[in-house]
Image (cartoon, rainbow, N blue to C red; front, side):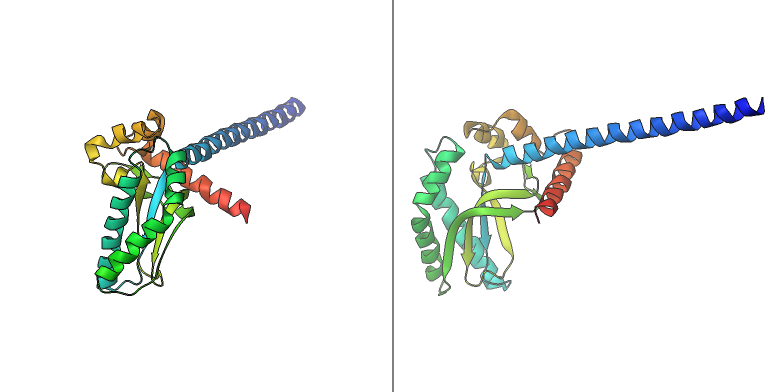
Length: 217
């Protein structure tokens, strides 16, 4: 009887080990699937947006105020330029063709405020942190951005979305504006703060984006 007990004990331990291994494999598979979904969701969302990134010369109050004035001037210029853009691809090409004009607008605003800072306006891929706005939120990750760098670009920056024009849209019109510009309802729901599971989804997007950046180094 003692031998049978030992054999049974070994068998039970082996079963427990196998069950643990299966549980770990299932958890790993779920994590990989969730991670794949997270990365694809962020990539698809980023593929529909063009961010606006304005960087001040310094953190001095006057330079921060100038940043906001330049932001407003560039946003208004972009709004008029992109009125007929039906999707992100058209908006991107339109902005590329008008970069010099946008830079001129920014330079004129700087000069009108009494400063002689140089300014550069570029369209390039940029890393952004997670950001909450009044009526929507965006996960961290890499986005195409219209970047306006004032002077040394050493001050606090400001960022939002230039296309679709969500930063110039009333909160009640955010969803309609986004869909009109080519976004689908799943992407809009991901952006809306009232979305169920919002915090968990965005946290997973951020963690997987960090992993992707680490693996690319």
